Length: 75
Length: 277
Image: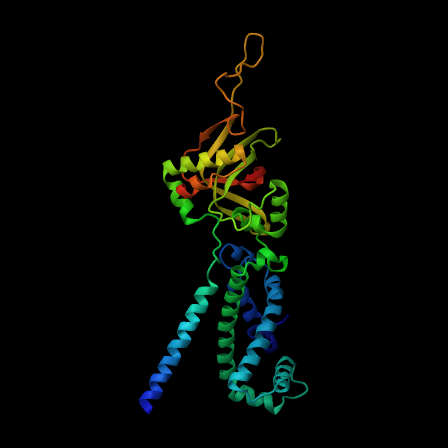
């Protein structure tokens, strides 16, 4: 009887910890405050992709349209 | 306000929870809104409202979960006795509190501090997670430059509508923004007659410590400087146009020179205008 009570107590505490962890994790999603994404930094560090990205920006400035497929391949 | 026992009690019960709440509420880029250089009275003033709310909520939760032996009237009497000069005598309740329950009060205060930190953390994350700051002005953080440089400004209601009108399509809705490209026109002379155009990717920015609505510096990477193409004139003084050149587009009217180095810091004081992509 005593063992069962201890087991239930432990399970109860574990459930509360799991609920709290899930709550913290879900609340923390999409809350970043970055001006630049990690993928973008990676792309700019490589001179080849940096040039491609700049070409894409130039293309957008000239035409007013993004080439989404090309952008996705760069980023 | 002199340093009386009443002021210390007020500081511990209201001001500190309020300050802790604000410290955890303004996180990441918005932490610029919580400045340690703020005047003390300014910090105290803006901590009073959250402090009172936290104290009331904590008291209700504590009362419901642990069932206090004291009522709100008891707390009022103790607080009145502690803040008064003692000319009206001290109630027995207050004496009992000081003699026996001071440690309990300190433990309660520590729990309130932890609760304030959690509440500050959770409320700002909820606002961001639910995007209430983009939907409602009431929840918007004061750091407007974050919304501009992160591109989130395009998802604000009025900008979304403006974007729809100018582009006839909802380009900005649910758009993922990875990076912000900036064309920055800078004045390089005091008379404002010489200007230079820089371009690069925005990686960071500083705000003025005394006024966070003002930009102080912008940090760019992969920076280039535009230089006007020199006109080639013929013998009669007319411009000679390159026959091979196609229709002149904004990006082809100038030469773009790479600025050597890793990070380019621009002083915002000299910025004439900014074009962000």
